[in-house]
Amino acid sequence: MIQLINVCKDYLVGADKIRILHDISLVIKDKEFVAIQGSSGSGKSTLMHIMGFLDIPTSGTILLDGKDVSRLSDDNLSKVRSEHVGFIFQQFNLINNLTVLENVMLPAIYSRSETNFDFKKKAEKLLIRFGIYDRKDYYPNKISGGQQQKVAIARALIMGPKVVFADEPTGNLDSKNGAEIMKLLGELNRDFGVTIVIVTHEEYIASKAKRKVFIKDGFLVKKYL
Amino acid sequence: MKYIAYLIKSSLSDFRRNKVRTFLTSLGILIGVLSVVLMMAFGFGLKNYINQQFETLGKNLIMVLPGTGFRGGGQGLIGGVQFDEKDVTKLRRVRNVAIVAPAFAKAVKIEANGKAEPTNLRGTTPDISRLLNLEFEKGKIFTQADLSKKKKVVIIGGELAIKLFGSSTNAINKNVRIQNQSFTVIGILKRKGSLGSEIDTISVAPYTSLFSLNPNKTFFAIYLKSINDQTVPQVKAEVKNVLLRRYKADDFSITEQSELLDTINSIIGVLNIALISIGSISLVVGGIGIMNIMYATVTERTKEIGIRRAIGATKKDILYQFLSGAVMVSFLGGLLALIIATVIVVIVQPLFPAVINTFSVAVGFGISSFIGIFFGVFPAKKAADLSPIEAIRFE
Image 1 (cartoon, rainbow over the protein chains, first blue to last red):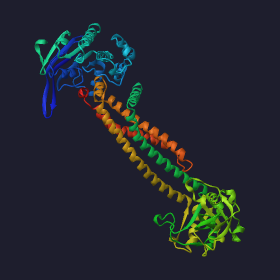
Image 2: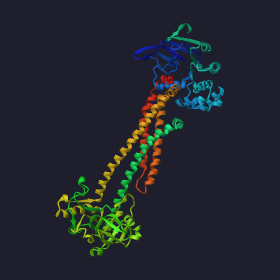
Image 3: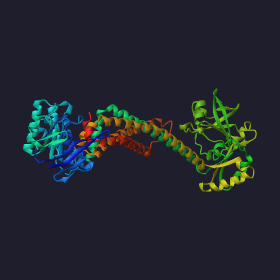
């Protein structure tokens, strides 16, 4: 469970302080499938970065399973990301000089946890499940966008995260591939109980989620809560 | 352990993708390490060679020279007195002196078969052979009888024999002309080879046979050997007392081998430091090359750094990733430099006694790793300190 209590985020633009997030309080329960919907510039990506421990709030508190993680050191935040969080991006963000299989296994390299399961076997299983096992030795720029996003999902799942954040996951895909990715995320949530938070500006994508949170100009819009 | 293997593996695959860049970067280090290692090889080689030469002469060799000798620094061998037979006779009486040999020296031309070669002519006694441990290719040193009969015989260096006669076999018992006087070659010295030693082109004759060149019957130097190493200080002191009765303290100097060796070693030491410093300049240039390329690489790979951070890499992970790349490039350069240096040393070995020892190898690897870490750490730190969010948005 991730809980945000009165979270604010300011950015310095030159000498001016600009508040991107205003007093956000929000709970993401385990096994939820939530869409954070907002237009471009609404602060939805910043919110996702803070919920995904990529960024720290200017003020307010973040609880992860009841533990305060809002003032963790950079190293500890990395550890939290490594163990509990998976990311899926609009531009897939695979590393082009690693093969598909190496990309999927990369989080395991950075994991400091003692769990000693076979990462390679798990990565291969995920690739089989997503139907792209035959592409495992390809480099990302040699496969299609839909396939790349599936690789990114496999990479997000390899460490068995509590929550997967998806930032406009279908933004760079055609509608057929987009629909397939959304179906996959739905299945992961339903069949494996993975908590999924999708950030999107598209009503259609948001409608696939079980709960919608609307953000506008850095404020949560209450009627959707 | 697995993590280190991963770092090495990923650096290697980066190298494979950027072969030209890797090659050029490590070339900078290669040249730097090569120059340092070669300078050391030549410096140590020279030192070893000179020490060996001195060892064959023996530590109990004492030289009496005019002027302030080697100790005075600037003044050198210029000035001072010219010794004569009286001095030699007196020095023979000093306690614990085993051998005394005076030497007259003159640079002359030696002629045979219509050829003329420059030579350093020494007029001395047969004892010089034992004193300087002369080794003969053919023949032997002249006798005491030759000396007293003022016989015109000469020993020549191996190189000189070849230049004048083609071989030492052809030279023996032949006549040569020195200052328009005929001398018979009765001995040829073994060639020492490298560094063009003076001994290879020397001529040695009984000093009594050279009075026409030396009408004052003086000597440039007197060589002594004490009976053993322990008596060197005592002999030195007594020789000094004997000579002080006739000359002023500034007019002569008494030098023992070990003293001379110390002086030469300290000169070579300074020379080595100078040479290595010059080599180090190219090493620094190579290091700056690494740094330059790495800064460019960090910018080029900003997005990748962001991605890695997002999936759990710590700052240290990023730092190590870039640092291992830098260290491996420079280590590679150092390794190649050592291989090339070894080949060069083997090639020049017949001409120059260069050496590569474990110390040079350790220094080669040590400095190349150090350069990699030192010049790699700044760009690697820059990469590690990038904000994950800004990095991942970077296009």
